[in-house]
Amino acid sequence: MASGKPKDEKPKDLKAEQDEALKQLKALKQKYDIQKIYTDKIENRMKELEKQVDRYKKEQLNQKNIERKEIMKNREIQARDILIKQMQFELKKQKDLTNLYNEHVKKEQEFSTIISTGKLPVIIIEKFTKEDIDNAHREFNIKDQVVYFKDFKHSSPALKNLTTFKPKMILNKFKAQHLIELKRQRMLDIDLKPDEHQFYGSVDIKQLQDMLGPAEKKEFEQWFESYRTR
Image (tube, rainbow, N blue to C red; front, side):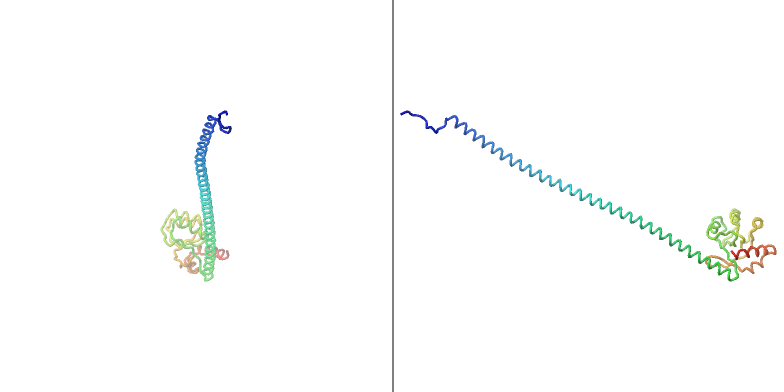
């Protein structure tokens, strides 16, 4: 009877190869498992970083929205401030116009009252200076009017300025050399202090006429006739 190996027994070198292959496969599997764990960690870290990036972007977007809203709010506030200032300016303008109108009405009423009592309205000017004369002319138009200077000091420049506006009568006492220029301009001069009211002064017409010479009186009467019918 012949002796030999069983039929199902593999050759020794083949089994060794199989064992080596299994060993390598096991090592590869362990390496794969380690790499998978490492890869999973990396993926998880990446997902976490991506979420952080998304949160950062959202925060930036929210911040930009807040800043944009703040900018829009500031612009709206600025626009409202401008509108308020414009309205305040317009309101002040309207109030000023109303005050000017009311003052004009009161002046006219006072002027008419003075005329109705047989007196002559007088424009009262604070000082005999070019500036005060200019201001009085802008407010009252002193041309062909009667004026009086409360603080009167002789001044050639002021006189020159006064004659350019040509009021009809000045109720102050001028020096002789200045009277020549006034007469040349057909402007009357009488030293008479008027009564003072809110806007005008006034003098009694009869008292005024009594202080004039014959020629001046005639000139005054002609002027007054046209003056009261304006």
